Length: 367
Length: 152
Image (tube, rainbow over all chains, first blue to last red; front, top):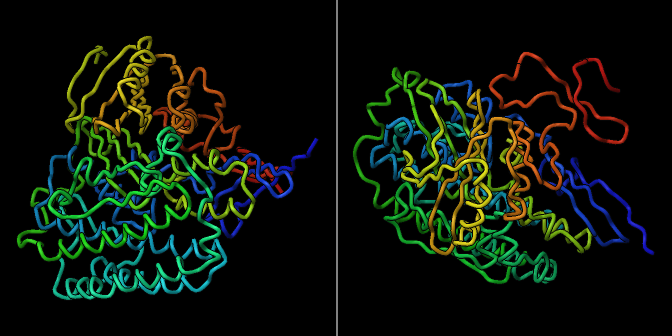
């Protein structure tokens, strides 16, 4: 008869990416059961949204996935603009596509650096954040802010892309591919990294679908599903890109899928910046004096592919200037819930490596 | 507005199937057999007199999307955790914030808030002026209290 010991991992554990607390039952050094405890960052953004104007709600969405804020803004606006009936002009759509892809790269780079730290590698962190800094410079130039950009707004974007921003993006496209290859080789040429990821944390296709896992985690388990292709929004139907899929389903597969996604994102940005049309960047129906008077009735659900997975926003309006109900489908929450299944019967050190690949951002899980 | 079972098209072009609460499980079961293997989201909407429960389903094979909607007057609906595991945390979240009781859920606890929290914040009649504080007991578990001076 062996004995189980119940342990708490977190919420102040350095490898838990914020405030994740894992209640684990261990037998020796093997984890037999794992139960995530969440809610330490809960602000109830859904309730807050019911008490503010449609245009102001964008701020709460910035604060959900704070490492890829423009991607969240795009998700909210897809729903809100359909409800309010103020579609953005063509130029704004392309600008948003560029911003969303930049935020995807930024988010994956943060994950990459942090994942290196999880596995005890300090060097890749600096390389990843060095490249991310280039994206931050673009965000600052466009919106005046590094993380919580609040750049997109109802009916368009906050300000137009000027010569300098376009130049910076072109510079980024030139250097990014080689930097990504450099980062990739820092990981995959490292024997310790391979031995800690290859074959560890296997998630089958059936488990992933059953638990509602989306994004890179699902694609690493062999399901070719991406909202950008399945239900194209913004300008994704007008650019060429591929969805990376792996059938391996382990940590290494999830790592490689994210690396390939960054390459594809660079490809999308380089096409979009060439196709960027001229014209207004703002729908005149959504001018500033009209912002707080916009009314929405009915219900709209919009889904977008955020950096973590399928990000859905469900808005119900009752004809007032504030939404009646807002519901957010956060991808990280579903991706974390599968940890109960794939975190079983592994070593404690491997649990850190597995929870690292789920790419958790707690602003979005707890909302 | 009276709730009528039937099909309609939403403002965003999605197919909405409205069913009575009694027919909910059989509808969802038959949809799952048709290949809707991804339960994307469960939402509760407080309409004051009744609560609307909305299920967003997606099929990976045929790339179809469907919305199933039902209403409940006593804030109780059957749980669908035996059909999709992803319903587990969604139902816990909706129980926590909206106060919908999912009958048959194996472990219906609050997901975000401490277990003894009073009220369900997303209800329209929730009093936001009634401030509750969160503290930690000696075992490390969180609990809610109305007393700001409580705790160690």
